[in-house]
Amino acid sequence: MRGEPRSDVLKRIREEVERARERLREIRWKIAVVSVKGGVGKSFIVANLAIALADRGRRVGVFDADVHGPSVPRALGLRGLTLVAGPDGLLPATGPLGVKVVSMALLLSDERQAVIWRGPMKTAFIRQVLAMTAWGSLDYLLIDLPPGTGDEQLTIAQLIEDLSGLLIVTTPAELSYSIAAKAGAFAKLLGVKVLGVVENMSYFRCPVCGSVHKLFGEGGGEALARELGAPLLAKLPLDPLVASSMDEGEPILLKAPDAEVSGKLRELAERLEEALSMG
Image (cartoon, rainbow, N blue to C red; front, side, top):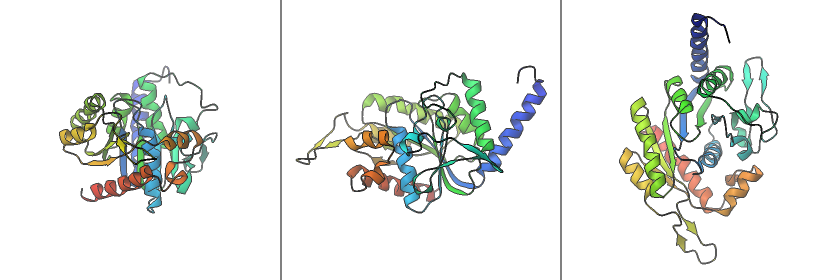
């Protein structure tokens, strides 16, 4: 607040940080999903990984920390909903299979409304929302971060002291791999573990003849995982149904459970849980 004494500002920030951490103590695993380059399908993976984990009987929440381009609510069929406050704080929206969701998109009257904020505003938003949100007891909180290694990523890494680690999304292309490697440097600098790498758009399988085409090159995910000393948890194929599932708000795991990409997403959830259990 303008004119507020600096000592009062710092006290309020410390209180918000402590409340946020107290809320998050009820959540066992807190995983930030990152990509340094945009357009690699990160939010698609977050939404469907949440569904895959929930389908395994886990209690799952998603915090869409992309202030400027939130897309998780649309991906999970929550378009048009608005978050409300309850006696214990801000109540997440409930998506398919009970997945809890908090997002800037659920706080706007129109999803097309632009949020034009500088870094300090975004940092304050993330801190305050996590301080207010009544997640309850969860097995997983997936945090969908915007592309890059800026304010939002730093805020999450510093605010959540017991962050379980990063899941890095890339594509097979060499350019995507070289840019995504910055996320590894970011993790090392802040002392955050890289849980694994997901290579999206890895290949396209012809539905007529079954032949495999690597449209965006190959080897990017494997090279990145090798460089980071982390497992390559999944190689997800291109599927035209992915775009329609995102637009329609029906996760592909529910829209097309027998599709090859759905099977790979279920394998991703299984391998992620294995990686976490190994410490």
